[in-house]
Length: 197
DNA sequence: GCCAGGATCGTCT
DNA sequence: GACGATCCTGGCG
Image (cartoon, rainbow, N blue to C red):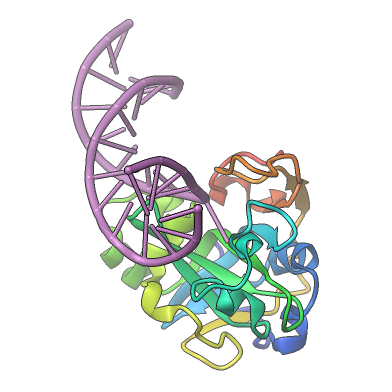
C-alpha cells in the first residue's frame, strides 16, 4: 500500500471524450475516489459499440442510452444478478463506448473499505470489478452520475509514479475475445484481478 | 492450492 | 425464458 496524498486534479470532460482504448490506457495510475474511499486504478478494459462484447452493440435502449450520452458519466450495471460493475462513459456524444474499471490499489479510506469487506485480505479488497464497487459502496444508484462533478471522482495520476502499461485480452467475455483491450499497470501486479497478458 | 459449481436478477428475444 | 464485462464456497489432497 502506498500513501494516497499525491493525487492530481480532478479529470474533466476532455479527458473522457476520446477513444475508449486511449482513456483505458491513460486511466492507469489515476485515482478513483468515492465518498472518502478509493485508490490507484491498476486495471481497465475498453468497450466500443462496434464490437459485440459491448452493451452498446445492440443500439440505443433505455439501459444503453447513457453509453451514447456525453463522456465522463458513470455506467453502473448488475452482473450475474449479484455484482455491480462500474464503467466510465467515453467518446463523443452519440458514440456508445465505455471503460470498465477492474481493479484498484486501495490507498485512502481503508477503514471504510474494511468495514464493507470484513475479514478480507488486503489483496482481495479491490482486485476485481465486483469487489471494488462493493469496497467503495458504488451501486446502481450511481448509474448516470457525472464523474466530473458528482460524489464519485477520478483524479490525474502523479508524474512521479507512472504506470507500466501492458495490454492483453479482456476477461470473462465470449465475443470479440481476441481484442487486446484490457490494460494493466505492471508496476502494481499484486493488485490486479488476474495476471497481465 | 486448485477446480467445479452455484448464487441471483435486469435486460432483451 | 435465456443469458451474462463475477465472486465465493466447499471438496479434495
